[in-house]
Amino acid sequence: MSLSPQFGSIVPSQVQQTLASNYLAFDGGANDFAQQYLPEIYEQEVERYGNRTLSGFLRMVGAEMPMTSDQVIWSEQNRLHIAYDSCGVEAGGANNASVVNIGGGATALNVMSIGDTVVLLDPVTGVEGKGIVTATTAGVVGGASGTVTVQPFANQTFDVTGITITGAGLLGGVKVFVYGSAYVKGSAMTGGTLAAGTADRISVDPQFTQFSNSPIILRDQYVINGSDMAQIGWVEVATEDGASGYLWYLKAESETRLRFEDYLEMAMVEGELNANAAAIAGTAIAGLPGTQGLFAAINARGNVEVGFTAAAGLDEFDAILKNLDTQGAIEENMMFLQRQTALDFDDMLAGISAGFNGGVAFGLFENSEEMALNLGFSGFRRGSYDFYKTDWKYLNDASTRGGIVGVNSIEGVLVPAGTTTVYDQILGTNIRRPFLHVRYRASQGDDRRMKSWLTGSAGGAFTSTLDAMEVNFLSERCLVTQAANNFVLFKGI
Image (cartoon, rainbow, N blue to C red; front, side, top):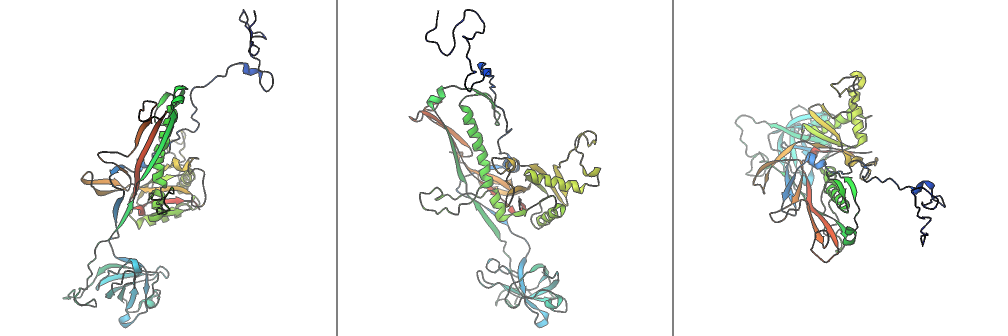
């Protein structure tokens, strides 16, 4: 009996044995003889990149709270004490007194009063002088700067003592700050050289600085047509969001969701205000306000450390601490670093402990030298500050900022662990919030923190005649970076 037609070289045999006529021969052409056997297929995916998600940073350092408006506005306190930089000192006149031109011009009015005792600091010559204010003018916003006439306590002019003299009406580099006041017995706080009928003492109204940010709308979508949904193909997976087992086309939907959740955080970190919001109508950026992310906020209002290396060591880090002293001096801080910067900190700290165990920190198994060595540091204290250090995957991942080292590359961020007390209009009470937190649009009718819904006519959705299932994702949010003067952004050289 013969098989007609014959497919390939397969001819049935009445016994179970391998014959030249009843197996597929792959030894011709580009084929290999070993291909006669079916391949062994692994059903499970290999997780060659480990955990691929990048979110989690804001969950560690911040919070999420609802808002109902197109804009969030907050106010931050200014300095409590009276001080001016970039002042100019004129040559001494009668009674050795000098006129001091207040720095700041259009942005700072003089609020020093007659009777105030002040310190003059010249960072160029290193000379300081003290005296008392005998006359004052407020200045004009957008016009001439204010002035004070200061009579030195020393029996000589400020120029003789070595303070830099800039000349009449000019500004310089001298710092002036008030440290108290002094009056003779029985004196009255009226008259003086101010305008008629005004007091010598100027009432200082507290000023605050106002900041704002706008939420952005993030959207994404996954679409699969009805025909492909009927073509079943199973893949065994263990996804980053905890799902495990066999997935069909929903594997792609799951990864779209994971990617979108990462975007929710990445947009808050990388966001920029749109300077081209008034662009020509119809363009992609017309009318989009943008949003100020973490990096942009620190660049604009915070501290930027450029080129931190292990070679610079402790001196450079101490300079950061000295700058923090001039700001909020928040005791506990968290550092999120890329790999090289984290290693630089480890090397710096190992250098400090060079006199202990040969510079090696024993941290595992009860500090037993024989058991294991811990060459890294997760936390340390310097001065009055505590620092907790960890790697930030976002700065190490090759699909984001990982591997980019050079001019202006982001190499880490220092985030204060403090909180502020504010009045929440939604809750109707005072609550404590971290300096870094996310606001998302929400009301009783719609919560836009993280929305997902199905459209189409397949996969359980019956909303349109489209022969597909559409999985939609949407969020509307912005980041509030309060007290950015306490944040530090580490950048490459």
